[in-house]
Amino acid sequence: MAKASARHILVNGEEQCNDLKAQITAGADFAELAKQHSGCPSGRDGGSLGEFGPGMMVPEFDQVVFSAPIGEVQGPVKTQFGYHLLEVTERTD
Image (tube, rainbow, N blue to C red; front, top):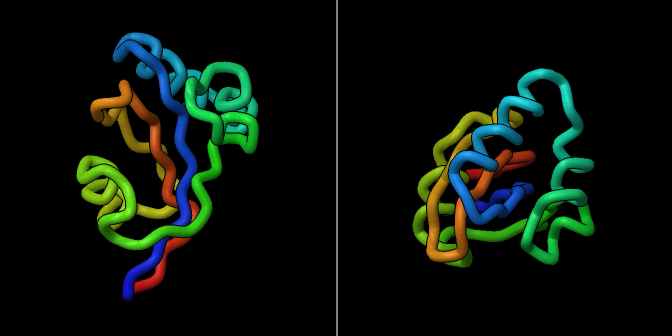
C-alpha cells in the first residue's frame, strides 16, 4: 500500500497562502513559517503530518500528496479547512 509523509501550512486566505509560498521560494524556512502562521496544531512541529496512506486525509490532500514531486511546495490547495501549502517529504508506492 502506498504511504506518504508530508508537511503543510494552513491559513485562512489564498492571498496569505501565496505570500508564504513566495517567501519559501525566496529561501524562507518552511518549518519556521509553519510554526509562525499555520492554523493547524501540526504547525508546532513545523507542519509535519507524519506518515499516512491514501484516504486518511481529505481528497484534495490525497490528490496532491500521491502525485506531486517530492520536496516541491504545492499550493494553494483549498479544502474545507482553508488554504494549504503542501510539501511531500517522502512517498512509497
